[in-house]
Amino acid sequence: MSAEEIRMQGIPVSALAERFGTPLFVYDTDVLDSTFRTLREALPQEIDIFYSLKANPNISVCAFLGTLGACAEVSSYTELVTALRAGIAPEDIIFLGPGKDERELTACVEAGVHAVVCESIAELHDLDALLERTGHGTFPAMLRVNPAFATKGSGLSMGGKPRQFGIDEETVRRSKEELAALRHVEVIGLHAYMGTRILDAADVVHNTRSILATAEELAGELGVPLRTVDVGGGLGVAYFDGESDPDVAALGAGMREAVLPFTARHPGCRVIMELGRYLTARAGTYMVRARYVKQSMGEWFVVADGGTNHHMAAVGIGSFVKRNFPVRHLNRPDDAAARNYSLTGPLCTPNDVVAKKVPLPQVRPGDLLGVERSGAYGPSASPGLFLSHGFPAEVMVHGGEAHLVRERDTPEDMLRRQRLVDLGSGERT
Image 1 (cartoon, rainbow, N blue to C red):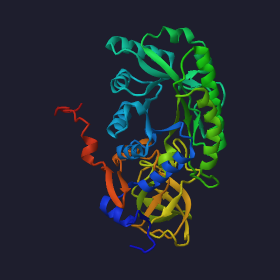
Image 2: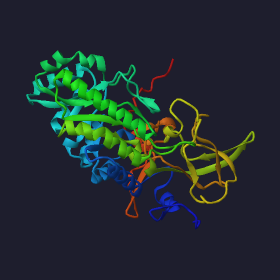
Image 3: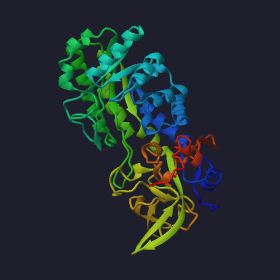
Image 4: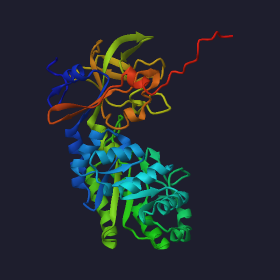
């Protein structure tokens, strides 16, 4: 072990690799804690922070954020079960998604979540019919609105243009009679999500102010109460050169200016901000071990034991690497860069390149490399079954101790759900 080796809460990375193997995702709860508390202190108390499980659905990550005060936004039956088992109170859970099935709607009703966020008029009717059949009585729902205005500052726009998400604003404006005809669904507010990976605090504030104004206007036109408004979120983190993390102090000041006049006009209205990537990304490191170091036509490659099968987000789904996530030599981080290396995995495809031409200290076979800011959209957004390598282990470091929070896939795990058909022993013709 090198004296300069990276440690996580005092634990050398080599000890983590020896105990749990590689590839490995490691989550540092000190970073989770600091990220959440800093944001919570900056935002007005009138905003409730909802953790979006899609960013990292690990139950221990969800549970830890829950102890800090995070609520939960879920988008599948399993995410709902995860949030409940992680200890999130049902009244602090909302369920989103453009294609919910009957099992999911039923589970929301039976659990008593805060609201189902309905993304089409048809879904409102489906929920109403379900409540009629089950004799449940009334149940709260929110309308996800696809606003007429476009977002600002988003790397991926989710509203303001044709999307499968939500109900177009003009359609909502024409739905007063349909909403009034609902017998069991009680519309308690509106939701809009404009985009993701927004780095400029001013853009988040602008979007929030616009969503609140739209919600206020639509609620008045439709005659529905404003008991909850979800302003989305989309707060990003800096991955690439030239980017900076959002200014949390500026965000807090701007959100107070945008939200406090609204809540003064609508006392008791719950204002929700959804955050996934922002809460978890910086807490995670994807750790791989170099198997081979080789040169090809003048370019140096590190072939590691894990790659895009575990961390497709580092590449950008559907495109070859153009910009790199931060990559660090975990054994000798303070040594001077020796050369540029392209970090690849073990897959039989030229697209298995996690980072391209990264300046690093000399890399030798057996060295540990870390892709940082990897706590969001890691295993869950990656093709872990490609070439049957399976998903890696996940470890949470908390209080100076390392805890296994997801076991590594084994061949038996991957084959257990398959069925070998008896094709008989007849001769082929």
